[in-house]
Length: 318
Ligand SMILES: [Zn+2]
Ligand SMILES: [Zn+2]
Image 1 (spheres, protein in one colour):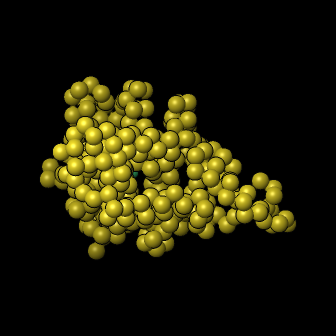
Image 2 (cartoon, rainbow, N blue to C red; image 1 turned 90 degrees about the vertical axis):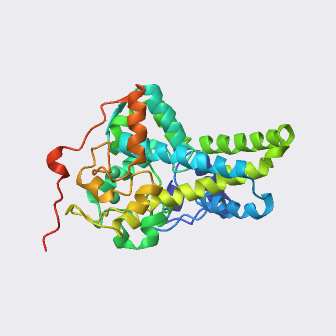
Image 3 (cartoon, rainbow, N blue to C red; image 1 turned 135 degrees about the horizontal axis):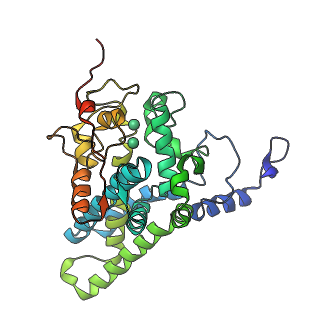
């Protein structure tokens, strides 16, 4: 780490590439030195490649099978992010057994949004400092930074284990957090293999290995990513405020629909501990319905409700 202190020469280019490549696979490796608030282009190259790979839809073509695979993987991973990365790991809004906790941590990691400890540590930080100068993804620092610029910087790379001591005590979660990229790599390889097999076994489906990879992994993941992070960017800008919270959070029905309930973000900042973010009966919260279904099956329990006294609108003083 001392090679590139201000007194010494910067690392040669080949060593910087090697270090960045190591970080693609092992987030526990030593970070590349440099300005903590600048985008680390070498490290984020796979994230950019993920977007460029979507252009391959023009080459692999379309099939309804590939399309519905993309939709199903969007839905399953969105639920893992909203229900588990957010409401369970970040906010402890319900209880789950260790195997269920791990299964949904793995499914969440398939979203290419890093591991559950990294995600929860940054999210808890957001709630502690929402829309203050310390909030790393407040839109008060600009839309691009709130949407994605923040985690492309060196500052946001490491997992703050002190913020997630309750989660870090599980070795399987720490391991997943460190090597989270293995999960999406396996998903992508599995989709390619499935598509290649279906092409020969069921040619009527009109799919192929490259097509299922591009739609099921690249397109689905990029859409999932951008919809998820609208909660950091748009849901602190567009929508209504039922509660006069100290931050800029909003309730936005369109975002709530796309993110399975997370768009009721002003409700959420008002009372983050609840398993439910749609407080009113008409505020559709698909994640909460999914969690209720899981509770009925005995997979999760103790879903925390919204205390009745906290449900009443508390408007901003005029
Ligand atoms: Zn927020
Ligand atoms: Zn939250």
